[in-house]
Length: 105
Image (cartoon, rainbow, N blue to C red; front, top):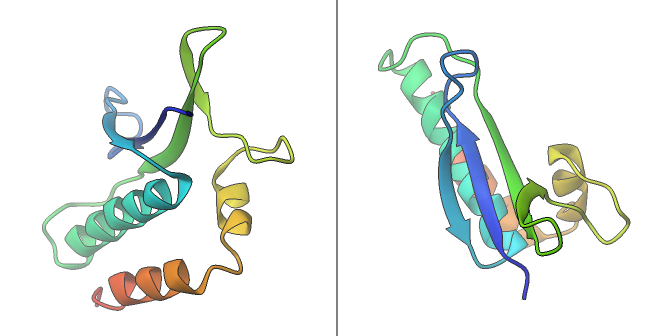
């Protein structure tokens, strides 16, 4: 079984401290990334947080090296664009994301 987590850096360049969220599946990881991203954007739009630059990514644990690394899809690609492509046809996640981001004004 693959170990997965979301790595979220809420402010790149300010110590680059990361917040980690363990997840059970790639789908759950995508939802957590969307939640954290929407929440940061909500704070910005409502003057709770000043300008920021954040980063969220899905990571997997490599049993051979005993280190965390970027998640890799079946085709050997990895990054958030590939995570988007991986879920391109997933209507449930698309609806989840649309509802989440529709709250931001």
